[in-house]
Image 1 (cartoon, rainbow, N blue to C red):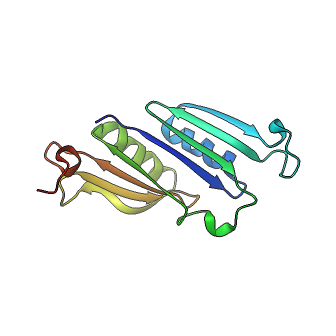
Image 2 (cartoon, one colour):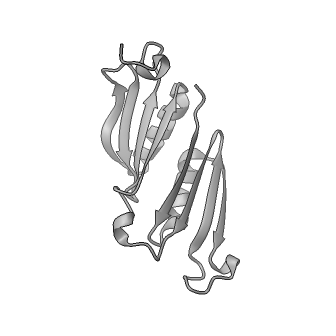
Length: 145
């Protein structure tokens, strides 16, 4: 199963910092457009209107959401999940998150369903899940049997 992921995150004025962090984890090409680039005057000129990080096999997008209530940002807002059988690649993502100060919620280790699974929360409160299919694991077979 190839690795794929497309997510869109809203930040409270830290989109540029967060997206640059994600680029340091995943690599890829990052483009950032500000509110000023779109001629918008009702938001900070240097705020991020839209950003897009294209990495091999997936895309992460984000923007500053100044008009959204703060409860919408952080841990409760979204979870991003990698489902893959590319062990080295996905385990590398997990380790780079940890090395850069993300909080480990669940260490990346073999689980009762047979796959390797881990969870963490990055410095912006985004929860990330990593499920790496083992040959006899649930993600490969599609069942817990």
